[in-house]
Length: 176
Image 1 (cartoon, rainbow, N blue to C red):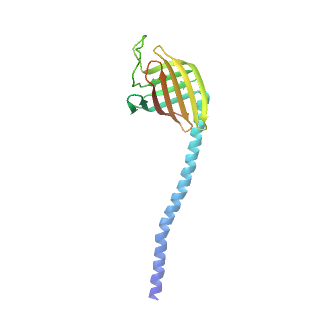
Image 2 (image 1 turned 90 degrees about the vertical axis):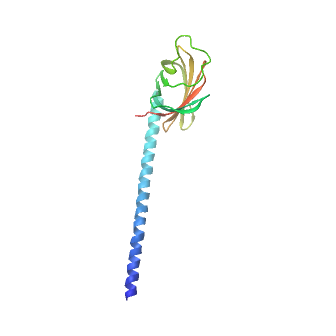
Image 3 (image 1 turned 90 degrees about the horizontal axis):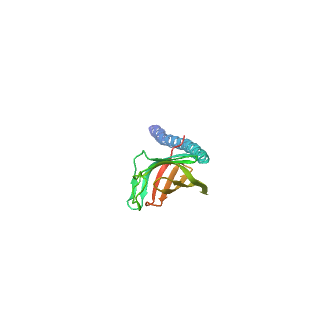
């Protein structure tokens, strides 16, 4: 009889030993499902916010890095940005590159200006990508901005000008 009692106790002990990990695994799976659902909701909200910002032409892009022709890729401080406000481009971007011609009108200001857009063209080359091709003229130079915005809020900006090396930037759309 003593063996039956010890084997029953051993069986109960093993069940409790297995029960805790099984419960932990079940909790992790349930939490994972909730997290996936929450992520899907956040993704849908972000996509909707990006779509609305693009339709209204109201974009604010916080710059995280720049890619230069001569000096490679660099991280930038968080105070640089680009804004599209309807028919106006507000550019507060760093510039690291070579000017091919010195500006006549004033000392160089980098890519820092607020100007009315001369030409803007929107396109959607891929399902999750919005593009703006923008031409703007300042006292210093004529610029072409290519802004690509992915529906998850990531953005890239390529800037070409007549008198400077090309430069590009990566960043995040600031969404409400």
